Image 1 (cartoon, rainbow, N blue to C red):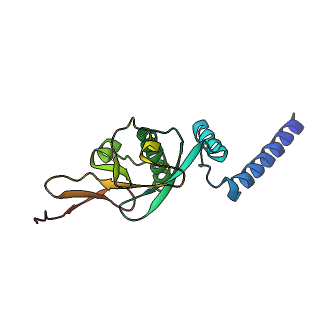
Image 2 (spheres, rainbow, N blue to C red):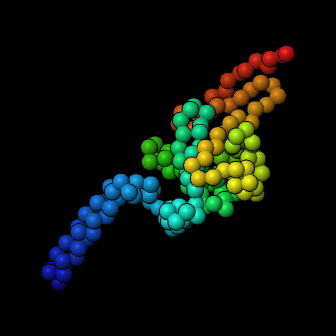
Image 3 (cartoon, one colour):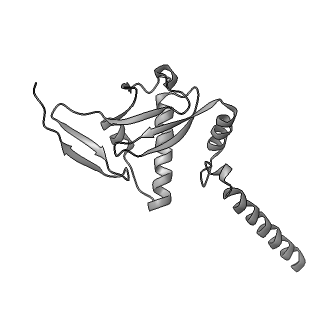
Length: 166
Protein backbone atom coordinates (compact mmCIF):
# COMPACT_ATOMS: atom_id res chain seq x y z
CA UNK A 1 0.00 0.00 0.00
CA UNK A 2 2.83 2.35 0.90
CA UNK A 3 4.52 1.65 -2.43
CA UNK A 4 1.28 2.50 -4.24
CA UNK A 5 1.09 5.88 -2.44
CA UNK A 6 4.71 6.69 -3.36
CA UNK A 7 4.02 5.80 -6.99
CA UNK A 8 0.86 7.90 -6.96
CA UNK A 9 2.71 10.89 -5.48
CA UNK A 10 5.42 10.60 -8.16
CA UNK A 11 2.79 10.50 -10.91
CA UNK A 12 1.05 13.59 -9.51
CA UNK A 13 4.36 15.44 -9.24
CA UNK A 14 5.22 14.53 -12.85
CA UNK A 15 1.76 15.61 -14.02
CA UNK A 16 2.01 18.94 -12.15
CA UNK A 17 5.46 19.54 -13.62
CA UNK A 18 4.19 18.82 -17.13
CA UNK A 19 1.12 21.00 -16.60
CA UNK A 20 3.26 23.89 -15.33
CA UNK A 21 5.55 23.57 -18.34
CA UNK A 22 2.59 23.58 -20.73
CA UNK A 23 0.95 26.60 -19.10
CA UNK A 24 4.21 28.56 -19.25
CA UNK A 25 4.63 27.82 -22.97
CA UNK A 26 4.30 31.09 -24.96
CA UNK A 27 2.17 29.32 -27.57
CA UNK A 28 -0.49 28.76 -24.90
CA UNK A 29 -0.28 32.29 -23.47
CA UNK A 30 -3.78 33.14 -24.70
CA UNK A 31 -5.36 30.31 -22.70
CA UNK A 32 -7.03 31.68 -19.54
CA UNK A 33 -5.94 30.44 -16.12
CA UNK A 34 -9.13 28.42 -15.55
CA UNK A 35 -10.45 27.83 -19.05
CA UNK A 36 -13.97 26.64 -19.64
CA UNK A 37 -14.88 24.27 -22.43
CA UNK A 38 -16.30 27.26 -24.33
CA UNK A 39 -12.96 29.12 -23.96
CA UNK A 40 -11.02 26.18 -25.37
CA UNK A 41 -13.57 25.69 -28.16
CA UNK A 42 -13.31 29.37 -29.15
CA UNK A 43 -9.49 29.26 -29.17
CA UNK A 44 -9.50 26.12 -31.32
CA UNK A 45 -12.00 27.79 -33.66
CA UNK A 46 -9.71 30.83 -33.85
CA UNK A 47 -6.79 28.63 -34.88
CA UNK A 48 -9.02 27.00 -37.52
CA UNK A 49 -10.20 30.38 -38.84
CA UNK A 50 -13.82 30.23 -37.69
CA UNK A 51 -13.33 32.75 -34.87
CA UNK A 52 -11.80 36.21 -34.75
CA UNK A 53 -9.73 38.26 -32.36
CA UNK A 54 -11.09 41.74 -31.71
CA UNK A 55 -9.28 44.53 -29.91
CA UNK A 56 -11.40 46.61 -27.54
CA UNK A 57 -10.19 50.20 -27.11
CA UNK A 58 -11.11 51.66 -23.73
CA UNK A 59 -11.67 55.35 -23.04
CA UNK A 60 -8.33 55.64 -21.25
CA UNK A 61 -6.52 54.69 -24.47
CA UNK A 62 -5.58 51.16 -23.43
CA UNK A 63 -6.95 48.09 -25.12
CA UNK A 64 -7.38 44.36 -24.66
CA UNK A 65 -8.25 41.50 -26.98
CA UNK A 66 -11.23 39.17 -26.96
CA UNK A 67 -11.94 36.18 -29.17
CA UNK A 68 -15.41 35.49 -30.55
CA UNK A 69 -16.84 33.24 -33.24
CA UNK A 70 -17.18 34.68 -36.76
CA UNK A 71 -20.96 34.43 -36.39
CA UNK A 72 -20.97 36.42 -33.12
CA UNK A 73 -23.63 38.97 -32.31
CA UNK A 74 -23.18 42.21 -30.40
CA UNK A 75 -24.41 40.35 -27.31
CA UNK A 76 -21.73 37.66 -27.78
CA UNK A 77 -19.08 40.37 -28.02
CA UNK A 78 -20.38 42.04 -24.85
CA UNK A 79 -20.31 38.69 -23.02
CA UNK A 80 -16.70 38.09 -24.15
CA UNK A 81 -15.74 41.57 -22.90
CA UNK A 82 -17.52 40.96 -19.59
CA UNK A 83 -15.72 37.63 -19.12
CA UNK A 84 -12.32 39.10 -19.99
CA UNK A 85 -12.71 42.08 -17.64
CA UNK A 86 -14.10 39.95 -14.80
CA UNK A 87 -11.26 37.42 -15.17
CA UNK A 88 -8.65 40.19 -15.23
CA UNK A 89 -10.14 41.91 -12.17
CA UNK A 90 -10.50 38.60 -10.32
CA UNK A 91 -6.85 37.72 -10.89
CA UNK A 92 -5.54 41.14 -9.87
CA UNK A 93 -7.88 42.25 -7.08
CA UNK A 94 -9.95 39.31 -5.97
CA UNK A 95 -13.73 39.28 -6.21
CA UNK A 96 -15.15 42.64 -7.30
CA UNK A 97 -18.61 43.42 -8.57
CA UNK A 98 -19.08 45.38 -11.77
CA UNK A 99 -22.62 46.39 -12.65
CA UNK A 100 -22.69 45.43 -16.31
CA UNK A 101 -26.27 46.66 -16.58
CA UNK A 102 -24.96 50.10 -15.61
CA UNK A 103 -21.98 49.80 -17.97
CA UNK A 104 -24.08 48.99 -21.04
CA UNK A 105 -26.69 51.61 -20.09
CA UNK A 106 -24.02 54.34 -20.15
CA UNK A 107 -21.52 53.06 -22.73
CA UNK A 108 -21.75 51.45 -26.10
CA UNK A 109 -19.43 49.70 -28.50
CA UNK A 110 -18.71 51.30 -31.84
CA UNK A 111 -16.87 50.36 -35.00
CA UNK A 112 -15.90 53.05 -37.52
CA UNK A 113 -18.36 55.46 -35.88
CA UNK A 114 -21.22 52.94 -36.14
CA UNK A 115 -22.72 52.26 -32.73
CA UNK A 116 -23.36 48.59 -32.02
CA UNK A 117 -26.64 49.08 -30.18
CA UNK A 118 -28.78 46.08 -31.09
CA UNK A 119 -27.64 42.96 -29.22
CA UNK A 120 -29.06 40.69 -31.93
CA UNK A 121 -27.08 42.21 -34.82
CA UNK A 122 -24.19 40.17 -36.20
CA UNK A 123 -20.95 42.08 -35.69
CA UNK A 124 -19.81 41.12 -39.20
CA UNK A 125 -22.74 43.13 -40.59
CA UNK A 126 -20.91 46.24 -39.34
CA UNK A 127 -17.72 45.15 -41.11
CA UNK A 128 -16.00 43.78 -37.99
CA UNK A 129 -13.43 41.18 -39.01
CA UNK A 130 -10.43 39.44 -37.47
CA UNK A 131 -8.02 41.96 -35.89
CA UNK A 132 -10.60 44.76 -36.00
CA UNK A 133 -10.73 47.31 -33.21
CA UNK A 134 -14.00 48.29 -31.59
CA UNK A 135 -14.22 51.28 -29.28
CA UNK A 136 -15.95 51.59 -25.97
CA UNK A 137 -17.56 55.00 -26.10
CA UNK A 138 -19.82 57.11 -23.95
CA UNK A 139 -23.47 57.02 -24.76
CA UNK A 140 -23.60 60.60 -23.49
CA UNK A 141 -26.56 62.56 -22.26
CA UNK A 142 -28.26 65.81 -23.16
CA UNK A 143 -27.09 67.68 -20.06
CA UNK A 144 -23.41 67.33 -20.90
CA UNK A 145 -22.53 64.61 -18.40
CA UNK A 146 -20.34 61.85 -19.69
CA UNK A 147 -18.95 58.90 -17.81
CA UNK A 148 -15.44 57.69 -18.37
CA UNK A 149 -14.05 54.37 -17.24
CA UNK A 150 -11.15 54.65 -14.87
CA UNK A 151 -8.05 52.70 -15.77
CA UNK A 152 -9.20 49.66 -13.80
CA UNK A 153 -12.74 49.67 -15.24
CA UNK A 154 -14.22 49.50 -11.76
CA UNK A 155 -15.24 52.99 -10.86
CA UNK A 156 -16.68 55.70 -13.03
CA UNK A 157 -15.42 59.24 -13.06
CA UNK A 158 -18.04 61.83 -13.86
CA UNK A 159 -16.72 64.65 -15.98
CA UNK A 160 -18.72 67.68 -16.93
CA UNK A 161 -18.33 68.89 -20.47
CA UNK A 162 -20.08 72.21 -21.02
CA UNK A 163 -22.50 72.18 -23.89
CA UNK A 164 -21.04 74.23 -26.71
CA UNK A 165 -23.36 76.46 -28.69
CA UNK A 166 -22.51 77.24 -32.29
